[in-house]
Image (tube, rainbow, N blue to C red):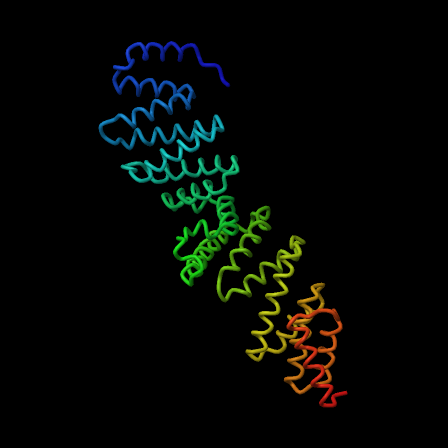
Length: 333
């Protein structure tokens, strides 16, 4: 804690002598300004709060000084109570900005957001960065890690940030709201410059999670997971998700007549280490071969599907066994 300069102590003492319980607002403001100039932000904040609460009329200049002082106090003291008081002051200023420059308010929100990050308060940091960009859109030119922090939080708590009412839970409207929120945060993540390679991995993980809420963007999700795989960052569940998408896209390719792409995707799944996915890939390859009249290859793939895990009783393995037996019954070598 810094020592309080003697000159400031004397100045404040003089001011307090004329500004007791019956003192004027001007005297309190002078006291607060002296404390602010001396870097005693916590004490100055309390006086500014008193002035704002007791004033007959709202003054945006005073409210800005209060918000600025509260943010400085939260930075200097690293105190959760000060952060909450700063948020309250900024909320009031944001609703009634007067002639205050939006960029000035936005920068205060941004600074407060980073204080929330340091306190591991991800939700309030998310909200603070959101307020900053809402009030001062030009900040999107300087936001980088802020986009990532918002995207990471949203990718894990999308329902919370989408503010879905309980009455819509489990309905088609909820899915629509989640899709919109996911797309919004994907756009934010895309604003992170490519030169920030240090943020690339975390950005891709957040993007992959958000893409799961979208519709018709399986190719995009596959591309993200493939890049993460090349970076050596995928865990087992992410790899399983990638195999599931490959199977889904292969089925779409086959339906659209692109058997070459479908086969390429299925062979990649077949060469993986996921038993269930390999069974499904072998089954689809067998169905494609049978559909093209190549019963020999079809029987080979059905046999492979059954041999991967003899005790497996999944729908795909049972389907493969039934198709294999049918081909054998028809006399296929």
